[in-house]
Image (cartoon, rainbow, N blue to C red; front, side, top):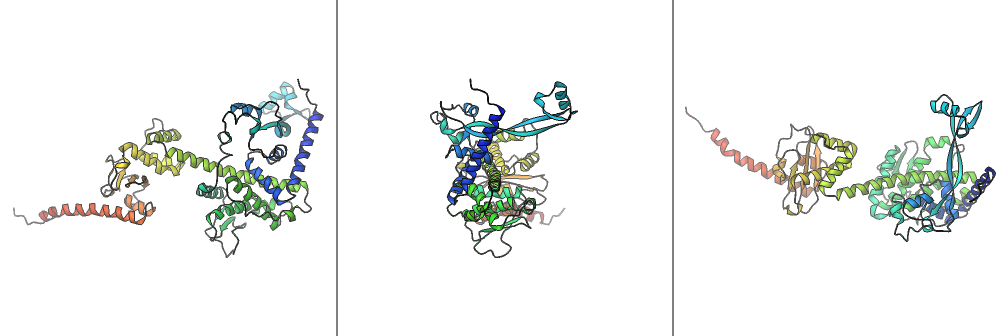
Length: 478
């Protein structure tokens, strides 16, 4: 049985580990190549604290994924015999209670003191200490032999990013800006020349150069969002010593590099040229604080982006389900089991919780309620939800009086095209065609065809009504 370490020995171990971490941090700033390598590593381990990421890298270069011994057991993997754990700092909060004018650990306090703390009669406070724990890298286990992939375990932190989901990532960055109350301007307030973008601290706003490519807009937006996060007016006032313009650029570029590299975007053009100037006369604490801020900002950005991508992925999977599976899933998510709700209540409930789900929800309901066979559609058809008519010729379905309805929900199907659904308030919109035009749901040629279909119905009705009108106008003798 291993001999228990004394408090002095544990303290010495922590000091040695802290010193090792400090040396590792110092080594990053020796060259742009070394800081790049570290930033790449930070991206992979952004769920860990910056200090623990540094320790993992120093002890196990090239690590891909780590977990504790119990963690790997839960995954069905076993740490290989003889493997040495990677040392990390483990937070260990200790609660103290006030006893005879002294703060004593609650665990060692007399029972009346413990009861007093529990009842709120005796003051208590928590202090954070750290102890040394151990984690093991993926290759130190038998996970590979058992066919357990890293991506199966760490779905959020180990995903393939890159150009194929460029739009989803751009959307995620837009929601990230919105969450931080950053305004995204349509264009710069003045000519910015060859600059790719700019952040206006006074306005807490970002503008991108309209000459950028779509790929450039991704990486530049990350850079400018880093400025908005780290160099806004409030953060600037909190600093003991203001950062210089080159220091701010260095920090923002490091955040952009971490996030872009982790998402699979090109990083060859990233410039860390401020490294040499920034490190001159800087103490270790300055360097650690710089990396801490970069790490925290990168981690929060990646968490937000990956959460958004997970949501998009989940929604895509749900859209690929059969209509009945999709409806059942939505009923479960909305808590609608056995609920007797009107169409108005259902649509507005989905709109308030999952606005992006309204259209696929209506699509699924239309397909399920009408038993639609899409492959048999040879003309534009439309279904008005709640009317009980099923899919009708578009012109016929559009030619109704909707003024008395609380809400109008519709689904349109065209030959060889996916379903399109929408909904509107009849007080503001006349009919489905009007709503399709307002929301640009179809290209102009398609809208013109739908309009012609409706006009043909109007003409037919007018022709049918002419003989009746003529008869009504014939003179009658009584």
